[in-house]
View 1 (cartoon, rainbow, N blue to C red):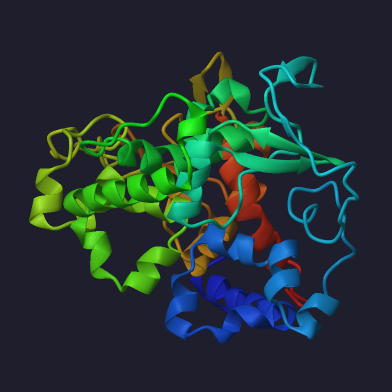
View 2: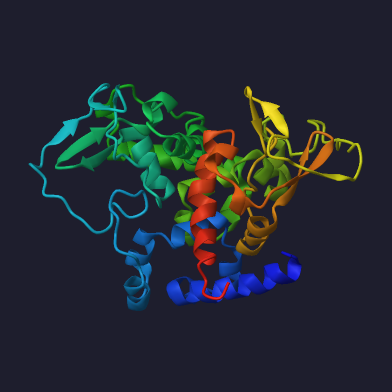
Length: 357
């Protein structure tokens, strides 16, 4: 019963509900709003964002703050610090989850941060307030996956932080001092300029936008824009010529490395049952190659939320069940679980609350 007519009509109902709850979002130009991705929507309806940018009516409609949650714990409560001393966070400073860590359990990467501020943290580290103490976190470039206590942090570091800053560190003539004391603000700024010139030589298409717009790009946006597929799609001939050879990670889904398209066995769309796919010593309802689409607007996301999607795996087409019926245990990797929890669930569960829907 969920046909395209229902998708469209329910989308309109849910959009009107969002307008009543988050009116500040809809003050932007319509073209900009329509281009927002799923993750952007889920971020904008978050507790902290509404407290920061919402109208008085938007804020009044917020549920009571639940401080232990990821979305609002940094928004409404300030702690009295024991002192103004900044303590160095050692390799095994914090004990939780039955092991020692170099970062406190409350650590989070900043949600919206530009490239310069991110570069500063990449080189120098950052000050983090945990409870009633301030801690100096080591330079982010020295962090490893095993240093991060959750799948969400590992994914964010891998997808948003590492691509852009490891690329910047490749700039010819840029040498990072081994001693942290030698990385002062002057070095941060001079090295940023050197690395930026290198980015301009590799990804000139990005810098064709206005300087104000480029400066406002967040870390995640930068890492997305310098990705192989993004450069292949939007880059100049010179940008594309500077790309490394395609790898399994960056080839387009459904294509061989040469670009030759795979021949499908047939045009039949097969239903993916609850235990259709066997891998990792377990049965799954999604194939191992399944990924959430990286760039999809709210209408297309809503369509997948209600109807599911067609996924090509190898030489077959599979009908994946509606995303609203997916659970964490249905997804085979921490990255997928995190993306579903952070990008997909918040906006679409909120839309499903629309009265009369």
